Amino acid sequence: MKRFKIEDWVDYARGVASKERKAEMQKLLEEGCEGSQRLFQSASLMTEAAQVLGKTEPPSGVLERAFSIFEQGQYKAVSRIPLSEIRLIFDSMLEPQLAGVRATETLIRETTYMAGNFLVSLRMEQEGETEVMAVVGQLSNELGAIGPVSKRPVYVYQGEKMIARTITGENGEFQMEFSKGEPLKLVLLVENPEKRIELDLVPASAKKMKRTPDETDR
Image (tube, rainbow, N blue to C red):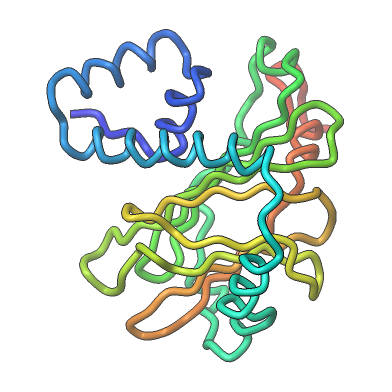
């Protein structure tokens, strides 16, 4: 049975999945696939929350309590998974870009990393020339119960400044929006042993530099 990632279900919930993929995912839901139903439910909640939060200004008291939970820079006290243990196993920027994709105004980059015993899947998206980037991701444990993937803090830093934060959901999924810039770093805190995963985020606009099928090495 084909498995879809959380970012695929987010596309499905947003109504932007391709016709073929939509049909496959709908079939899984109709067949009662529990894993697919859980991911679809999470993706639907994430999409609805993002739409509501984008139009809502949270009360100052809520922000103060959130800041007290996620203190800026707290991740620095946690040991980092060595860069030698982090492998990029998929990057859509390295694949030939189809003509139809090149024409779209939405700039998208998808990556998958193996970091120690964890798998991190990311989808970075930027609409046209806007200054806002969106990241949808999932933290999963592919090698056994080494540590939890739910309720794990996730941060985005621009240099030394924290610009976005959230926590992972039941299936390790997360979603954030923030202003684009360089350098950007994604930080995930994982446990048992307590460590952090650091990943550099290349702005989605970098996809403009991706080689197309009609280009050759020079």
